[in-house]
Length: 567
Image 1 (cartoon, rainbow, N blue to C red):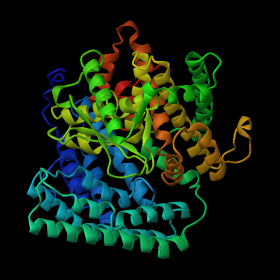
Image 2 (cartoon, rainbow, N blue to C red; image 1 turned 90 degrees about the vertical axis):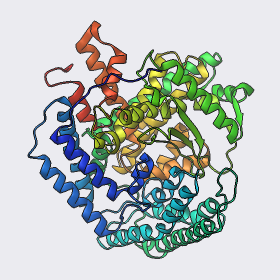
Image 3 (cartoon, one colour; image 1 turned 180 degrees about the vertical axis):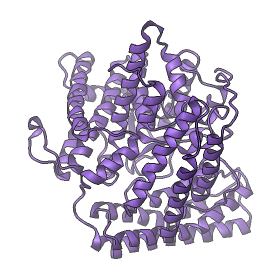
């Protein structure tokens, strides 16, 4: 590993100081983020999800943007911060102005409140005291969220029936006697030793109160919100365009992007046919997968085997890529692979603490009943979540405190940038020879195919566009979309149903992966065209990652200055 990235030694500017003040203020609105970053001093509460909390957050955004208007950038770093803050804070204000309180099966307060407990340390008695205190605050957070859902309903904005039912089911699971909270308290130990009676009692009371609060949320969803929920899942073009900008940090032509998604899906599928023929001459894609699945050397049995394999793969990638293809400083030289304590079917990355005392972590939430895994289909996932994917991306931003203000390092997250980079990283690993094995190559293409299918599904269903004739024609509906996904997403039934519901309830997010990859590759190729023989891919990656996560239009302006484009 390299000891450090080249120091920039910037003197913080007035724009940096404003960004840092906003970040500190933002942590007061989102103390769970402080926990995820390992930053003390923000208590053991949660965001204020109530209508009053939303209004206060909106005022903070307006006040920050107003103050930003009087500042001029002193250098290129400032120029990017100014651009990014205008774009990010502006789109958040637009989201708040809709009056919609979000409810979906993957990214709303129902999950966010529970998820923070995965990130809280558990090594000392004081750690468990903090957990007990936060458990006691769950009910207040959910009450605030319920109030916002009720106001949103009264204003005519209710999530579709499918989302209300899915989230109610999740809340019921959390509230069970042997659900997450009771298990958290029951399993609490310090190096295998029992806790004191006082801490144990506070944990058990907190767990009971938290579980009861989730049961109350489920009751509200089923009895008050569900009767007002529309059957229709499609959100329509106006709201979808806003969501797309939120997740991309860029405005794209949705009809052109949909057509590109159709063509990209056909292209990736054709490439899979070619790779299947390498696995066995004349084999179809499904036949090639069956051959790979039958290979004992490519199978894993049980969560411990999956975890060990993930860790070995991640460690090898870090060792190989550092110094050769990427600048990876020593604090980022470890990625911890974890099995998540939930069964929701998602795979995700959690950021390192600000001082790297807690490493970046890759979490695998295994659906109930899933106990066998195939390495050929999952190798690219390790690269996506680890190196050169999210671990390198998040880690670089966290590390570059000498260059970036705190808001840039920790709070400016754009899905199209982050997930687009992770997909870019998947394809890059093929180019670098790490997916030369035809099975691993096919697995990478399976992931790329899934992301291309999501572009088609998400835009097609929410905008109710026409289905291409070679896929049957007519207008997209969720039912047609589900059948479409079954042909292109080779995942378990439980994971498929989760993903299907996710796309319908989180419009614009799923396409941001593949569209983000497209924009990343366009920017890289434009730089290569501009610089010709002088182009250095490793240097380009370092420059790009040193910007942190920003909107993709901001990224384009930062890496392709005005007048220097391929057009």
